[in-house]
Image 1 (cartoon, rainbow, N blue to C red):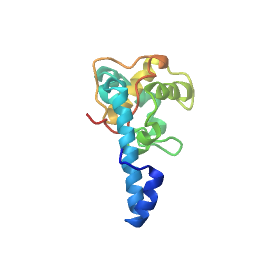
Image 2: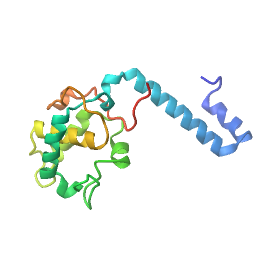
Image 3: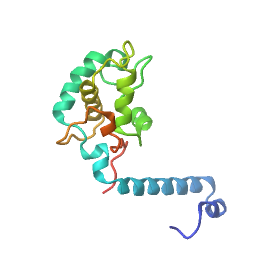
Image 4: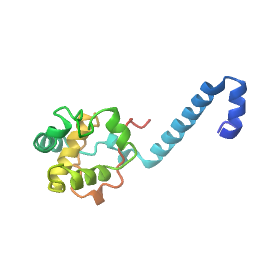
Length: 162
């Protein structure tokens, strides 16, 4: 892309700006590669394309309050034994995974007091509420209730370009 490889860039950067310039170059290359990969996936395959409905998220709000808030907190900010489900930590933890991965984690391990007890519809609704709370847009089609149907939709912490 720039006419030289990353291994060739290191000596050049050392001569012309040192470590900070090398770190900046790696960050630019990484961001560019991630952006190209995201665009290749297509807009319909990320949560930014609207992977849940508003009605589903409203049901999920009730399901979350009943099954999740006691550990993850009413504002999804986490607790002593539960991670946050909103914000940077959540988005970093789940970035690049699929909606099916999150569905399976919720379905198989939650609630902590009775893992695996939530039905598919309840899990999808709670996942929709998590996405809504994290600022992902709603769309016309609800999240499926089967994780096998959710393997193509990626969770991305930032909106893809374009």
